[in-house]
Amino acid sequence: MSDNERKESNTTVVDYDRQFQEDLERAQALSLESLALEKFKMQKQQLECRSYSKTVFTQEFQDRCRVGNGDSTSQSSNE
Image 1 (cartoon, rainbow, N blue to C red):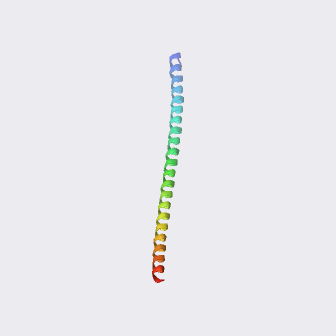
Image 2 (cartoon, rainbow, N blue to C red):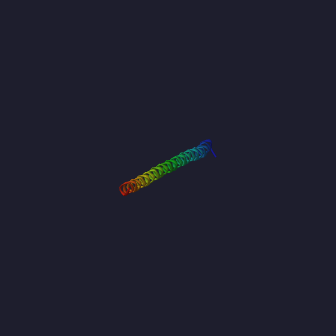
Image 3 (tube, rainbow, N blue to C red):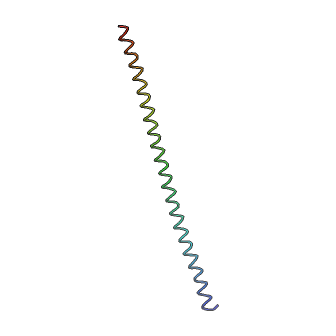
């Protein structure tokens, strides 16, 4: 094998190593992006759930107040 062939062979190995390292870095970055996206989705769902719960609670409270006011009005008219 000539010196030129050895250099080409070594260059190929180095290229594979570099390509592997680049692919690994891309995979890690993609994994981090996926985790960040998943975290964002979970936080969004939590906020939506809290907002829904607050809305339901507020609506139930308002409904009870209306019923309570209606009862007190009917009681005062009966007295």
